[in-house]
Image 1 (cartoon, one colour):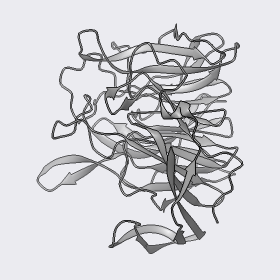
Image 2 (tube, rainbow, N blue to C red; image 1 turned 45 degrees about the horizontal axis):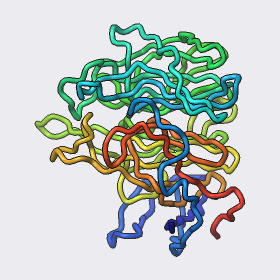
Image 3 (cartoon, rainbow, N blue to C red; image 1 turned 45 degrees about the vertical axis):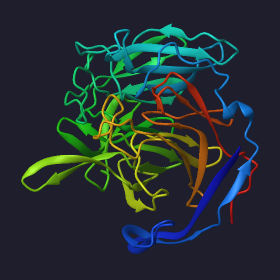
Length: 402
């Protein structure tokens, strides 16, 4: 199979913000964007071949016992080697009705072919399951935050649940146990959690009650307490994706609420990336600025992961259309997921665009394992899936374009 790759190389000074004109690769019109000054060159397309046959078809990793989407996923060490974990999400019951799962499943990557059921995530709510919960890891513990909490979904809607879950937990895979942590001050769902210095967790934007907010809330794992950091410089998004390399945050896209004159506000997918440089001496200070977007449209619920070894942040899949809990667009047609992979190089300040052999969306996490990008569950072209998909990334030895 031949994979097409496009590379966008951006050279810029980041000492002061300004405005520039950005010309899209496939659009003839110039689009004004508020960016720091940069110059970019669009390189010629080139091909990458040699994907293994395992990526052409289904992977060798066993599928989950039950298809699930909008689930939190992490890679942890259980004491018996590495294991994939899937927490909660949205699923179909035996009667083919949508419901929210409270199940936690794990698969050891030591050759095991069986997923094992683990203890469910606790909750202070009457409803025990959640979907669109966000997860990250520090010191081999998973941190689980937010999520929509309605167990039985009778009327799928484009409008998110207005009930926010404020309780916050860590999960220890060795003990198979949870610890309740300090409640989030302003609870959000469908957010992004990014670990910093193996101590702090930055929670960027998300859905709160009536709409998205632009707050950046930070959890200190040493002190079990929250504090506020510099907010995102937009109106807030949810279902966005992001990563962190050193002290640099990057968040892209998601969905936002747009006010209408004399009418109810509407939801639309945001096309936009923001870089935030955390002050190395003060974790409450973040210098945010708009960054060039690698695609022609924004995406909702992409999967994203940070790779400190290569200094890259990877974005996989997502949807270019708004969809309801059934995966249907406003016209009631099945929304199709994207197969694009975006890679941001924090050292070169550049984007690279690849094509995955799998199209998928409705993710909350992207996992990195032995040079492979993994997604667990989500939605493919047929709907909610339990597949473990491998989205092959560039070899570490492959030279950067120049």
